[in-house]
Image (cartoon, rainbow, N blue to C red; front, side):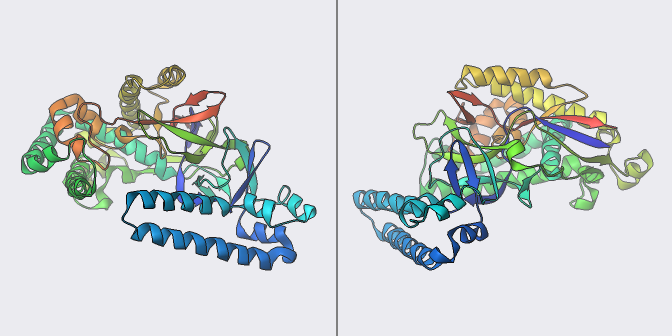
Length: 420
């Protein structure tokens, strides 16, 4: 079987890499990307020695300022050093190189013709800003099967956890955790700083262990702590085909809503209305095999038919979209787009949320805990995350994508269609 994955909003699936100012140029509404080989080809041997000396000088200055910043204890002096550091980093860019080091117009023009690939820039891209890269193979973007499978896994956990027998177990675990860490949970509400971070680390690890036990209980045969007996091991999703970057990618900045201090975050994003195709199959899911492996009736039902997996996705996404639509800080155009996405969510072709900007509720047991027991959510779970704790309004922020001309969009939504 083949799975069609259609993007309903821009999405960003990162590979852990960032393009710095020496990896791209902006030109007439496009971002041109380079690797070190392309850069050296363009500057030619005429400027190679000067280029390496220029890089060394710039890097040495940045390292000097970074050391000063680490060693300085006076706040005002640190701010001044930080300003100087930003200026030094800004100068370490291809734009600075071409404008100030290269005098030959022929060499300058080579950069406009010899690059890895180019994509549209929806908003102004600064010459020294880091751009988070979209995952690629041979410089061609794709959607990893593991990304889709991870979203399905969360939906399955949500679906099973709604049953009282499993929820009562989790409720007991979280209540016990809350009693054991009551003092710490109360101390860090709405607070920041190193002490809070140290406490948070301990709390996050504790809730992480509960979630791991929950995953084993819900998705492992007979609760076995062995990946060989994981229910979703029977679901195989391949990586999608590779696409050409100009066809499906663009660069833009993301805005963080409901935050006092804005900072620029730029990403390569996949456009909406792009369709990717990958292999999709269930294997070894016959009743006799599932019985032999030790799966219970709830688990067997889900993995026995793709329709049941899709139902899990449909129900989870329906609830998640309601949660997003209730977020009061979204602009009207984003809420309109979320309503369109909700109409696209069908039992036989559900929507899911993937990628870096999908948000806390898309990844964890938090959404069901919020529905089932708001007290536990507010007093325990909200404070045992890596983010600042905001009782009653957690998570406080959302990210939206800038599309230019004052238009914005939500992030991460795709629609699944199975082609037999």
